[in-house]
Amino acid sequence: MKLKTLPPRIKPAPTHGLKSADSWRSDKTSSERGYNYAWQVSRVRFLRAHPLCTYCQGDGRVTPATVVDHIIPHKGDQDLFWDESNWQPLCAPCHDQRKKREEVGAG
Image (cartoon, rainbow, N blue to C red):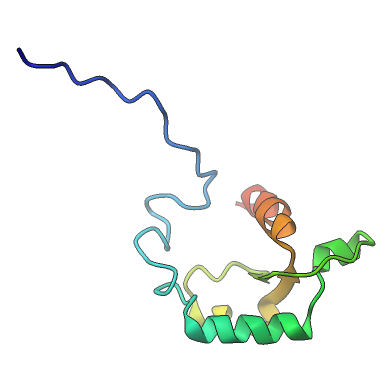
């Protein structure tokens, strides 16, 4: 007797346009996207020089920054990736929630 294959019960999570199959980053590792040792060194140096979250400061709060965000998404453009004038310090909640909402709204 052959068993019947059941359909999947869980649907894939929505990507909200941030990482789809045709995304510039869909088939690349983080290192291949530029987030390698050189990035880690630059990230630490930048956060030491800019220790507070830009968004929180704008709201009158003092929160340590833990993420170096690309203000304009670089989408693989290495010149834009390494342009420090395109970097801003953010705390993880601001990066993961507020910045994501901004990018989805602009997309």
